Image (cartoon, rainbow, N blue to C red; front, side):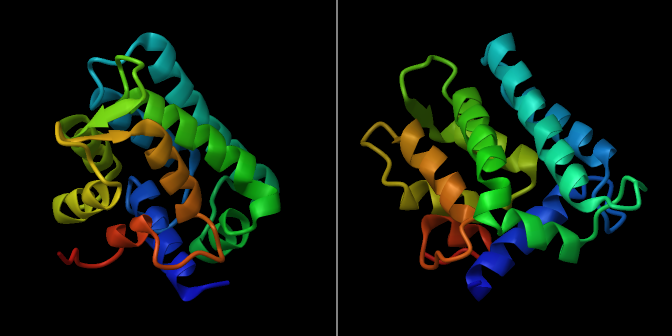
Length: 177
C-alpha cells in the first residue's frame, strides 16, 4: 500500500468525521450528505437522492465490514483497512463517484463547471487552493469545464492503494502550482 494512498484516505477520514469526534458514525454521513446536496441547488431531486443513497451505502458497507461490536463507531485504522481494499470497497466508491459527478453535472451534458466543482468539493471540506489545483489537473476546457467522466475516474483513483502521482494527490497538504 502506497504512502500517498494512506495520506489521501487520512484526509477523507478527517473530512467525513463531520462532527469532529475522531470516529465515523452514521450522523457524520448524514451531515456530509446534507452539506453536499445543499451545495448543488441546480441539481435534480433524483441526483440529490442518489448522492444521499451513496453516502448511506458508504456507511452501511463500513459498518458491515468493521463494526464488529455494533457500537456504530469506526476509527481511522479500521477505516483504512476497508477503503484501501479494492475488493471490499470498489463498488461503494464507484457508486459515490457516479453520484457526486452527476450532482456536479446538473444539465446532464457530461461536463462540470468550476463554480459547481468548487461548491461541491468545498461542501465536502477540501481547501479552495487544493480544489483549484485538482480542477486544473483534470485539464479544463477553454470555457473552464472538466469532463464528468474524468472527475469520476479521479475519485476512484483517489482510493486506489497502488496509485501515486495522481490528480487527487493535490487534495493532500498544501496546494502547489
